[in-house]
Amino acid sequence: MAANLNSFDAIYQVVQLIPTGKVTSYGAIAAYLGMKGGARMVGWAMNASHTLENVPAHRVVNRNGILTGKNFFGGNRMQELLEEEGIQVKEDKIIGFQQHFWDPSSEL
Image (cartoon, rainbow, N blue to C red; front, side, top):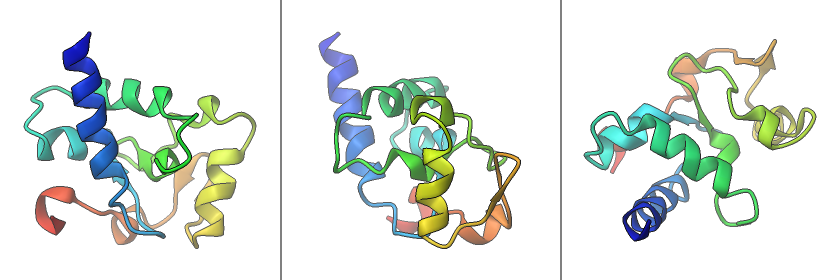
């Protein structure tokens, strides 16, 4: 369990670096951290982060730009947060996903 907490902390550190108006994917964070097959772990970390105000979990989506974590925000809150940052969402998918995509492996 301690290893998971350390992993969550590393994941949160990366998520905190995602610029406003950008999004990344679970897999991109896992790849950056060298967590082969760790996209699911990133998802668990995002689910566990909703009480942490300094972790912008709404900026983490699946590899196709779909708001797969939206249920953990309640209602349309994830979409609302993204739209407040200038990202358009239609039917739970980010419009122009590649334009908004932030890859920690190339940006950090």
